[in-house]
Image 1 (cartoon, one colour):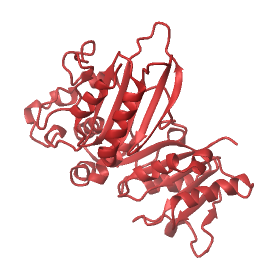
Image 2: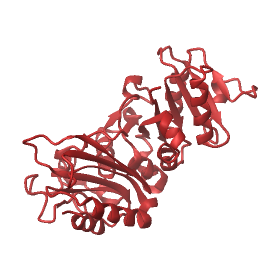
Image 3: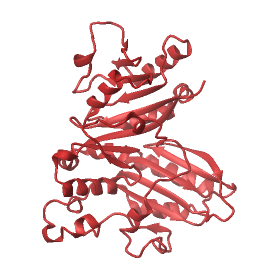
Image 4: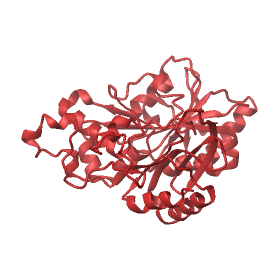
Length: 364
């Protein structure tokens, strides 16, 4: 049986998660979706659209979707659903897991790596984070959970952009891009986004494409991309606290830099990239990564790379969440392709120099 794709939906209160879930559970979209709702959520969906007198945890919706509120652990619920699908008791094509507004999506994502039974039934498609443009700046300043949700995301939807000035939206998007350059951002109307943009994003898969917009990285190392990697193979990619940023959306505002542009609050969730044209020694790299996840694992939100490994002519696709990591062999390197390793780390106050130096020392 093919794997069941799973999507993790996260985001702060008011960002439109409930709107999106209601559409999934009510709209005639022709897809059979199981929604797993973490019912410790502050904004509970059942009171509005479900008749919750029933003792049964799984409720069939009129459009063929299933809603399942979990009171106990997620693993149990996922195993249950997969088993019922195998036995033909339930018919659904994919799963959406809603985390509560303040949750850390990390442990939810880890479930798909840790549990063999779940890994054999499900494929984690992506983590979607919804952001409320009106309140995001304050939430990102005050709540680490909000910053973590950005760091974990494979795709970011920004709602309520019509309620704030364009330059504020630009500044927010730019700030988010610094925290997580991997995740594409899209402005949506209060969580109303077409389901085609929500599913089968393959954001989490070990695919060989490392989607980091090179122009974005270029903008911070003023030398341009050709010699952005200095002789250590690193490239710079975050401002020092308070440092100016020459991003075009800010240049025109140079006259009034004072109104809280993102480089004045130095967010603790940051990303940086390691690049090198030399091959990695697999044993050294494994030792180094094993050592750093032991120390920094809880602060390492996502790390992902396409690596040139000694001993194989294929790309090695590598990724991890917190302490769990895995790698897969990707397609072969092209005959004329430069075998450049690229690894992005997204985390909370990670010591960039230690990471980059350790990666450098793991090369052949």
